[in-house]
Amino acid sequence: MKTFYALSIAVFTLIFSSCDETKKVIEVAETVQLTGEYSVMKVGKTAVKGSSMSISFTALDKSVKGDTGCNSYFGNYTLDAFALGFGDIAVSEKYCDEPIMKSERALLGALKNTGSFVVKDKVLTLYSKTDRSILLTAKKTTAE
Image 1 (cartoon, rainbow, N blue to C red):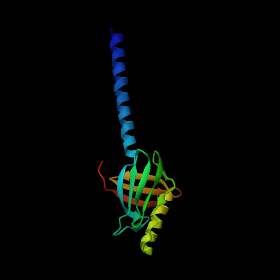
Image 2 (cartoon, rainbow, N blue to C red; image 1 turned 90 degrees about the vertical axis):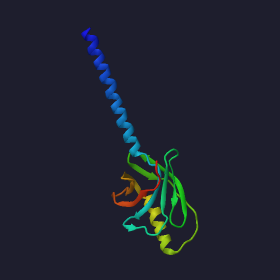
Image 3 (cartoon, helix red, strand yellow; image 1 turned 60 degrees about the vertical axis):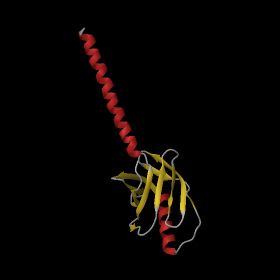
Image 4 (cartoon, rainbow, N blue to C red; image 1 turned 135 degrees about the vertical axis):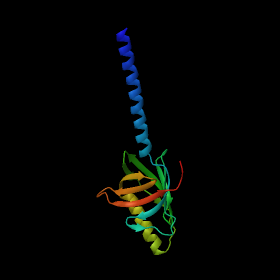
């Protein structure tokens, strides 16, 4: 009888500890997944003012789209833990004044050079794949 009780306790301990591990895996997966729309606050060290720059992620098909302040863009991204990369990005071809076009080129360059990211307190930060410098910061605008 003592063996039965000891075996029962061992089984229950195993079940509850594995449930705890599963919960931890799910929590980590939720923090790694990129979804929703973000309003771009800074590209590099330059603050974005009076612009509609945005970036929006759809986790289901790993697609990205957004607005450069002049043109719209779309493409795909790859995500592996905290490594983030963007494939070829297609951009509409409207021409705007040079300051806006300069900001657009900076945004697209930031996406091209992204190697990793962090989301903390609804702020997305993209880091360079070469030197971990900050390429872009954006605040989440959509609720989940």
